[in-house]
Length: 396
Length: 167
Figure 1 (spheres, helix red, strand yellow):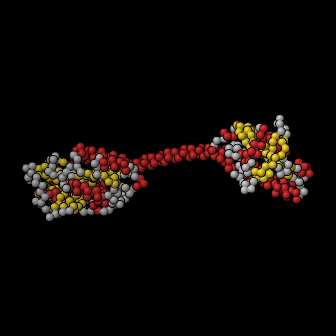
Figure 2: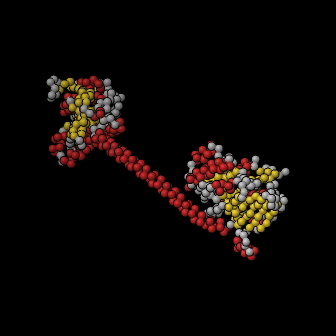
């Protein structure tokens, strides 16, 4: 600005720099500090040595000299003084050739208040941006948590479905088990259910040993006695015989009052059905003899007879949904039933085939051939008197 | 005889990644929870002794900007190396740091640098997978996690860089 009166120029300078620290350095091309002035202490430059290397004394010059372009500005540089906040200055660089000598002028023009004003604005903008970033990050985490929750819910639904299916399967299994236990020893029922193969319960033919037993004199007793007494006697009778049937692994076909039918070799096969049937019959007879002694003491003359036959029968489930029984049909069943009818108290009548199978361990007594209803000719029959010595009545 | 050298190191990275806090931790061993944005540059000095050598590190803490203008790039003039800083809880700041590195290399060539993933004290908010760090290491980056709050990794990073810029 030309032609300013000296007073105006001085005033202008005072106004411009009243609140600003201004300092300057002059560095020659050998990077020695040639001159310095202004508010050097404001920038931590109070102890400069002229003639000494400039960069060692004014560290901010490191790497900047010699100047590549002129003039050059580094705006808004804060120079720390020790560990304290320093003043902020724009650093102006320019070459001066032919003036004080070939070198570079460095002017430090304080801009602390401008920097602070800019920082206030920038701070607000950055704070807002950071808030938005955090909100976005929070939303992403929330969405991820929701997705995980949805996945877990779906997984839980799958587990529930699986659980329901397993419960249904187990309920079905329990139902089947309950049905099977009605005519099979519990261990055999569990074996069939756990194997999952119930095809053996379908209709088929097999060689079985059938055992029928009932009480002698029961009908007359039932006519005389009170119903409660009859039922009590039957309870004792069944409670005694059924565990024996199960322990010998017989298949319990049916109860009919005092009558009981058991068969062997089906639905699970066994190698010696006749032998098992006879051993069971002997055990039954021994057990009922004990019961009968008590009945006699109460004035009831009740005996026990058994019939056993072996042969092919048709077996399978008979009945309808909710009321199935597993049963055997055939001549062998009828024959065992007739033998049971014909047996006197204490007798175990067996067909000749059964007798042949058990002759090694049972004492047999021959009796006269029996005419069996439904058979064209008389049947050779033996009575199992006892097991031979050394033979136990225990299950095989 | 002790040899003294002086080296200019620039701190680069996006805003609010902790550049100023790292310098404060390194130079003055202090940490402030409050965030005060940097405008322009703040220059500090730290002296490191490496055997029989004394290295004066002149630390130029540059304002964090996602995209450095050519004017800001001039601050790196004469720099012997630089520290790239990213915030481990903000993955985008790593992208910014890597972008700045490409920009510096385009203008000044392959200067020694250290990449710090800062704020590793905020582990529950950490968002940069370890695999990414491994990949950066395999690509030749000197990269570490750090915390200006606890001081973890800070001294090591500057010392390592001092060794590389003043061999």
